Length: 422
Ligand SMILES: *Cc1c(COP(=O)(O)O)cnc(C)c1O
Image (cartoon, rainbow, N blue to C red; front, side):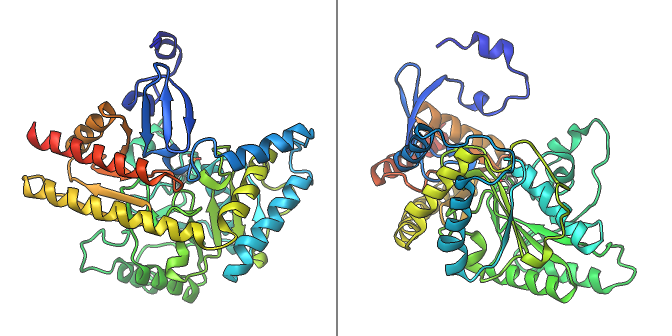
């Protein structure tokens, strides 16, 4: 495999190509093929960007049809039929059946762009600067979003410019399973000398993806919502990774029965792996002045076309959602067995997750690396997350075939056994 040009030309900043140093050429659903024709099962799926698999045929066809009629590909944020279709479908298929009433802001096409727009909107709407965020949170790496991201590696890469405007509080479970970390938040809010600037908003992932598959309890999320309501603070759910069906519902917050004031989606929003993001906001929060937040790629037409097709195909009834929950139970059961196996062999491990956003916490980044490297040798692409990379995580396409899912789980089991025996 020819990798010299890639190694010579690409900045040292590259990451995933270090874990999987082969040249990929093709992909279909949960299978990737490299230049030598070797196949791999994809349990990374663009870090949660390919919930509907690689080159999903329904979405691909929608895009080809659109292109073949010379549909508008780029139109800044002008009105297009593609945008109208997307809004209509979002409203009919997703928002109305869930009793949600949101306006849509199309910022630039990345997740961090949506987060920037969301926290800025909260500030504009409330006239306060502070944003409360949580330990191990990951919300992107541009300056505003970075201020709400916990990971020291990213925070140290600003050249010394301090990140500003956010306060970190302990996420659910951070202080051990018996402490309700929201007691601390509530106490700070009620204490005139607690030192916390009353925030404009709170930004939270219901399941922290990059932070290590940390699952916020449903009661914790409900309590967070009521604290926000009681103190006139906006609740922002960053559903960039946990949304679009990953947890078994379209929005991850549906499990808790809460209604955030602002929601961010990106990653799997286009469904096809095309860059796309939106911010959803309660209509009365739309305090933007025309053009006050802009960008050249606001609402990328091809992404809106595939997003519309994905919503129609997978979310018009509950068949897909039930299938995700069925597959999630398969993964959960197997992960629990692997965690038990590791624990019995002197490597304490626990399983956790919601829906198909699951992980095995093996406590040590070193052990997790050994497992995922072995898995790659056997043809499974799987990554780690968490502060020390200690959580082996499953982000497989939700559309993965059962036989691929079972094969991948067998590979993982063989990899765990190999690490135990080493
Ligand atoms: C990936 C991610 C982001 C950032 O998205 P980018 O497209 O990488 O900028 C923000 N929030 C969460 C929860 C994410 O998983």
